[in-house]
Image (cartoon, rainbow, N blue to C red; front, top):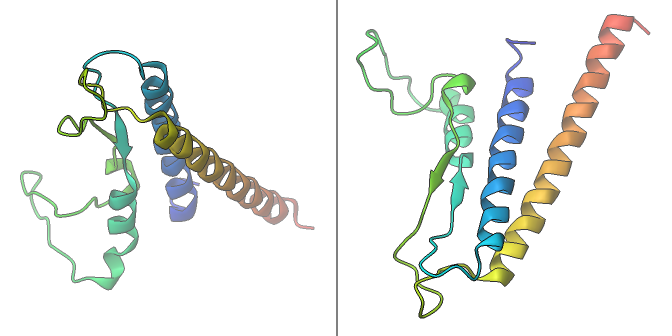
Length: 133
């Protein structure tokens, strides 16, 4: 399964969504903490760049010191945490809007459940192929 791009992308998506769960729950828990800067986890743009790579001209990376413009493999994608500090929601410096965070939590939960269903279907296809029925 290491060479299956779909499986690897689904696994990386679950990893990123899991980290987003942690960030959103931390934001909700610290909604009343003065000067708390909310956390965001971003990784979808990296996955999209990897999946759109065959549509673009390839960039030759011939040395390990060369910088790639996009991830060359799913393993190179790392969900990154960003703290937007220039947004202020309240006068005490906290930028957490509880309603927005609850919406992000619901969105993340739906994406996580959908990805889990895809992983389950993909595993079922593997079982079917191995079982030979």
